Length: 249
Image (cartoon, rainbow, N blue to C red; front, side, top):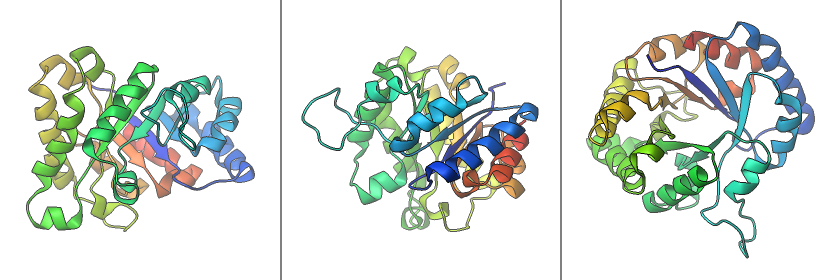
């Protein structure tokens, strides 16, 4: 059985004071947690996470990464810099990056490679919009998004990624895919991984990232191919985030 993983995505939220309270609350409740967990935070707060979370069970990571290793790329953050802060994870291809910053499938794939080359675990996000779902294009869209990444990875690299299915229509809207709807897409993604390697497909975690909350987390994560959650709003409240981690157990 694949171990469960719960990752909080703070998005563009937080302050040093708020973060200190939130992280202290999460760490205080982790003793009873039965799943791996992490928070992906805005880049300015990576040092705070490194200082606060060292030696705890809560890992940390970033929300984006550059495809470039170094150089004249103002505003970009290299994967090696994230590794320098002790990051374990980095989110790539989040729907907000795809929508607001025009990130293509090919660019997301290159970011995945950059993260892997620096020893980070990329959380590769895929997902469809409401219009695409209503047009019956969900399977095509997520397959194309994942295929772009698979084309650049050998089997060893593929085994080091995490995939996150995030239906765009269920992010921050209060809407959630039913467990059956989510499982259907997760199963398709697993089958796509299996075409490359049966053993790797059995190991790669596929997270659900569409408005998972304490009241639906257990049922979602009981599905055969849902291996945890990429958590947005609920990750900003220690009690809610801990409840989801506990549900994963």
